[in-house]
Length: 423
Image (cartoon, one colour):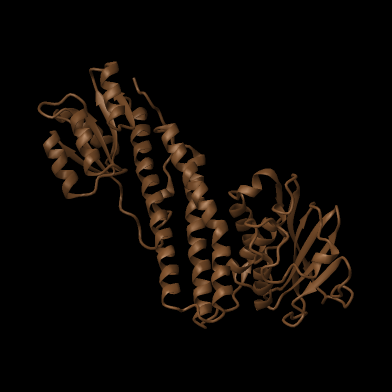
């Protein structure tokens, strides 16, 4: 009887946090005091994993102390140390070792003991090849998921330490207050998403006990992207503080739109609203750092989400401009505002990126102040007044411009005008 079954396919999670080189094959430890069963399991898995054999519990522990073991297949009834005792001692050496138990003498009590000591699966002899393949694959995936989560946590701790060190050394002297506040604002969204995703993954791992679903793997991939994005954002600002600045890079518009949609899926505010992202027919390259564009779009969308407690629709789209903007499009009115004229290179080809919502709109008395530092209409503690300031700076640094159009009760449309890369 197998208490838990898995039909998961092989997963690329082992390489989720590895940027260089090829990861070694997982190590599978097979422990049985009978030669026949040991060799049978070895034959099944020798082409997939680095299979190591042991004929007793003490021999298995010696192997686990001397080298990495990702998963183990243990016979429950062995002379001397039982498989259940060995399971407990392996977990003491490394709690992340995942264990599949095998026995020809199945009882309810042995099954309970195996699960109590931390086994992820329990199979009977003689085993079916498909059954043991699924069980071991599941065990390997659980180990990879646990390591991916630990690596994500480690990288977040490095980021926090880097920010603390930079603050202590005084390297944020130039415009210190605004830059530091901007870093914290920018990191708030992805760090919140990371925290939520890690809680979801932990809940899934605890609740599904051995069933690795596609959802869990997708969540770990999102964690990896969020952590990488946190690191890039922080280093961009730290470089700026050290007067090194950043170069005007380019990014594929559809890639930026796709990344924005993916990152916003985990935003708590997105749960009660609807986000629609439309890609361009042609995936053009535009002259702006990719993280800067994603950050600007996220700030605009989150700002729209927070503008209303009622469900609303926020749409993100883009279109190509073959002509420069005319004076009418750049004029301010009681219901529109044009920003960054001084930095805007109004030379086609351009891309116009729209972030439009069905919210309450912006009042005329507030429209002229929404890009001022620390200005916010949100209740105390719910807004820093930095989101739109950051958008203005990022777009201005790319020689782009911003137009805001709003109407009370009908919503607001932010349009970013950015140059297309032609060379």
